[in-house]
Image (cartoon, rainbow, N blue to C red; front, side, top):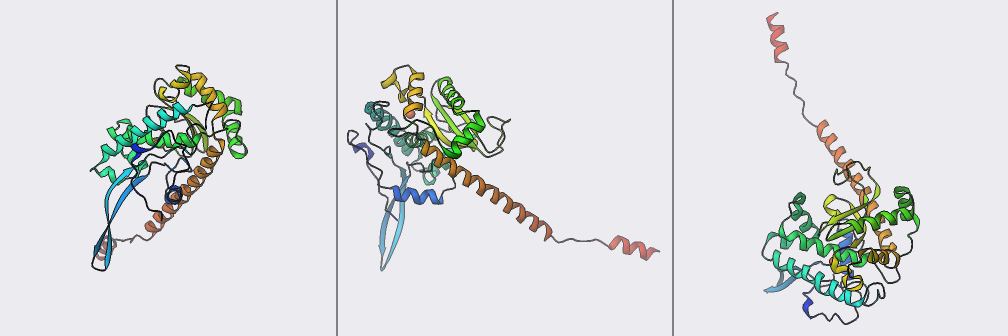
Length: 318
Ligand SMILES: [Fe+2]
């Protein structure tokens, strides 16, 4: 396995072109073992665990020292999205804001039980049905931004194909209607937040109790909240915090949204995420059935005690 090492993110040269992260192999491995939903390329801010080797006689022991998350660069150079998203926006958005979430979370979890958890587990543990703990915002914002950078690409936009397009047409009426609804969700999210396209395969009642399972939904969420906390599988997101668009569009959020949708969305990423979400949904069904079967077996194995004493005493008394 590729060895992880701490990286001093503060020394990263933002002006340099960004190549694919060196830890891709590790991420793929983590994806394989992760049951978590979301990006097919898992959250890139992965725990960076420091391992110290101790030599005792002929044996070497590994001692875990600390776990930290690291800032992963977008999977393209910072100027690759121009002219639709400027290098300056990426330098501030990724280089300052995203970095601050990583640094803040690392400070917040140091020496706590959260230090040992994955990013997703921290998100779930600190959400507490909306009564969020202070670490939630930073953890979720790291996840959201990792997910965002992979939701867009140079030369993006256009239209999805295949099953994703079919589901969009089935669940929204047409691709054009989907665009209308997605743009509206992004434009009407009051204040800071996010809009999402997500796959719903559960029976969780929140936030739209009337919706049936196994369908696409559009959601918007305030601040750092994301669909993971509602157990939905996100396929696509747009960041509508002002820091995402102010340098390029000032206060013209609708223009930013239109540009994002027409020129930046990576439908390939959304399609991969859909495939992963469906596999996970099928695994959940299997898991549920297994549990049911196990329970049945356990119930049928239970010892049945028949108390005949009263009928015996009845017959004795006859
Ligand atoms: Fe952002």
